[in-house]
Amino acid sequence: MEQSFEPKIIGFLCNWCSYAGADLAGVSRLQYPPNIRIIRVMCSGRVDPSFVLKALKEGADGVLIAGCHPGDCHYESGNYKAMRRYLYLKKLLKEFGVEDERVRLEWISAAEGARFAQVVTEFTETIRRLGPSKFKEKAASVGKGA
Amino acid sequence: MAEKLKIASYWAADCGGCDVAILDTHEKFLDIVQAADIVFMPIAVDIKEKDVEAFPDGYIDVCFFHGAIRNSENEHMAKLLRRKSKVLVAFGSCAMMGGVPGLANFKDREGILSRVYFESPSTDNPDKVLPQTETQVREGVLTLPAFYEEVKTLADVVDVDYFMPGCPPASHQIVNVFQAIVAGNLPPKGSIVGASTKSVCEECSRIKENKTIKRFYRVHEIIPDPERCLLEQGIPCMGPATRGGCGAACPVANQPCRGCYGPLDGVIDHGAKYISALASVIDANNPEEAAKIFDQIADPAGMLYWFGLPASLLRRVRK
View (cartoon, one colour):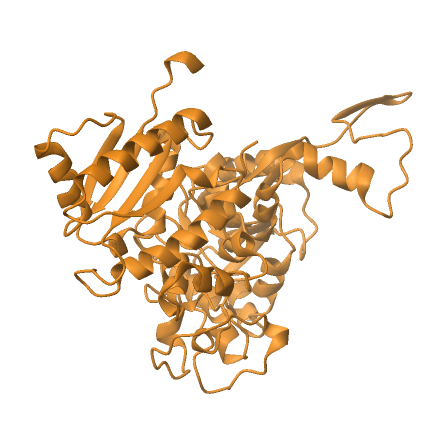
């Protein structure tokens, strides 16, 4: 079982920098693991912490949030908000007995295709080492509650 | 005269404050009993479980069920009252979202039993005796309810018609809901009743100035300005992420909102939503400084899920 484990990673990439960085990695034909599923968001500040928890619950083994470098946010402060949320979210995950390395925040500019490929490669390795997430639940129970 | 409504109120895993809140409708309670017969309510009338079992199915018009589902007895009573009731209301934070008892989901069953029966300083249990669901004695078999691995909400075990938040629900809301029931003016099944669709902040009269903060305070560390927003004074108040309807009772009394009315419509995780609010109010653009400010929050996860851990996305700790 452990042998055949392929991590599922959800990547929330901001439209202005990191998504363009991923695009550059693609057009530059850089190799990186195919484990990441990318969701394009307008800003890393759009990534509500509940998106991350929902991804983990619905089967992701890791979540990457990537946005513009500090100072470069298209909306001025969205990436700072993302950074602060991410700090609290990591604390929360630890208290729930989930390895906080499963969630990673990176700043990747539109010019950094190579950096995007490197981050995805590293992160996939990290998650591979951690193994499958304990958070996954059957789809039927997702979203149930008040 | 038209036949009186038959209502019931029962508590599972909770403190009993919901029953007291019903009695706290004061003289309005007389209106309630004028329009309705209380056919089951352990705090007020002496009717036993076997009497409820003898009711025909659907005999109770409305049952206010409060308390979370912590053990097999809670679940048994939830199923019994579901069968006997036309309308089942998850009454209060515990029934609706797990409530304060739901904080037990930060531990597992084994950890809780071990703490209570072996480790707590006042426990003397050299033979390591644990409660058993069945014990054979000379006279026969004695039984106890089975303690569950995790705390569940009422809707996790039975079909629920309405959800009424609050720890406890505000008295004026109880009267409103009761009047709606008497008038037969109930919203569609699955609705949240006795609450607002706007946040606590909308009802809070404190002045909000979009100020950011450099540190958090616990309530005993600061005497807050009575006019200004508590969150903007560094007191983590869950008002921005919490459903209103209580009249902002806590902030008005100089205490931060703890989130007992649960999340607003469309929010899938109350605590996660509140992280966004907290992150917006902090005045720090470098991670080290922001982390230091967050470190001042004493119980980061407990604060977010004070009233609703079993209804959250995370639900419980993982081993």
